[in-house]
Image (cartoon, rainbow, N blue to C red; front, side):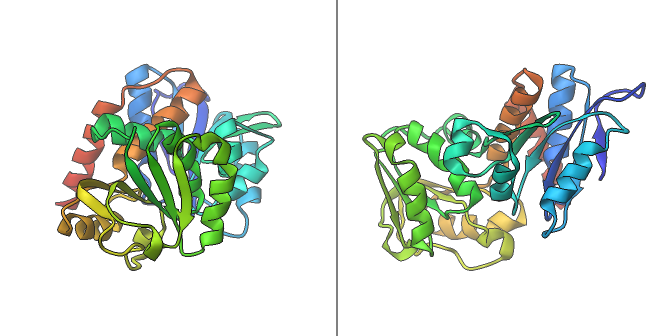
Length: 293
């Protein structure tokens, strides 16, 4: 694991990591290093690549290794968010509904699981992209861990309609049924991608299609004029969906803003202070633009 130190040497400090497969592309260490500098927090945040068949064992070994300082938490990325929910000893309400966890807090044998994906997505759409979700028609593409985490906060934002489109419609319908009570007046339904409908104000791609270089998971015509098309991925993985959406007149947006906003929610849960996300998002975009030159 490669750590980014955010404090001068002089003794053990609290440790955190992003855990997944793959993780080498993750910008989370940079983001949390910036948050720590901004807030004066002393911590280390690194990357932990774990085997696909030994997530639980690798995580337990990581937590048990306190030589460099106590392990206080981690972010969980693909493909382990559902497994992380099963490992947690306690779940927040939003994690319980999602049945997926991307934030773990460690306190001895107490492992609290939370899900910051949805609140990160909503904050990015409304604060950073300037799009109002209340009264909007929203299409959420995918029914995996990322989509599961996003659904609750999206519903709480009060759209007029929210459709979950997934090639295995039963998975999407399971999400609908778990969140039915929360939906209230929101028209919430599951559909196959080809039957999702047209004219959506916000379309969120929460599938792994971008990461795998697969075909666009929804047919043309899903966008209302000037709609926001957001891919939860960023960098090259998001370009296919964004380019396709922009060719249809939508406004494309990658997942960097969501990444920073969910990281801030994680950081606040771990450290008790909410960082300012705007300068960190700007620094991250500049960093990636420089790397691409």
